[in-house]
Image (cartoon, rainbow, N blue to C red; front, top):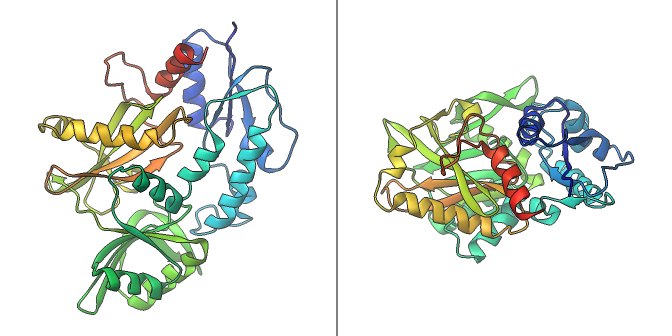
Length: 348
């Protein structure tokens, strides 16, 4: 049988390029690319008969962003509810392409892009996660914290990604401290590549109330372990339900995202702790097990300050962009080559 891959993505995006490289390295034909902008614009879609279709991120395509959230500055914060409606409608259009076999379940992708639903699925399956609640305003945030006697939380837009609009929020003795990449610029909330701090409660209220109509997921603060004065967590990539790659992400701020100034740490700091590495992998595998029809997931696993407890912060449908990282088995395969190998082994 001749294997032909197709991918829904942004042409020229490094995700599509890295997947293409992995496919070509196995001696297979060039993947057929379907642009997200075509999906979202309602254009006629097609792919080679029998193609194995991978769904990837819309990436940083301004045209796709405008079709998802409406016209505006791509760096702006907010618009998550509109983005999600357009995105899930696009997923359904992809699922209806005739003659293809999907490598990712569109329903599961939809759950992973709704932090409230994803948290409920994980919690219901016994995956260790921080406690959480939904908030629809700044007042509901503060009331929910007070009712639970929580002084520190993470406030997350229900449909955000890449830490857009996420706030590490603390309230104590009448003062607030909010760490976020959102900044007020030229009359709008926009993402910055630098994490900043808000201490004025009125400004924090404006940000939370601006984000709240799109839905907010609030999680109890999980104190992270630190190494060399930098807090860290791990992005663990799973392929066919099995953890295959991991990177330690370290930061001096509560956000460890690499694009926000975080840096890669030494994985051996975790692997060298007796029992800890096994707990990290178990948590990642259990989280991936909640999405059995998704070829790959990116699971963000936090290690507690006690260096024993672990908790899952996020499960990402498109969390496999870790260039230059080899797999655990020593084969030297990156995350994309690992997925191609898994498909050729189990899907054909």
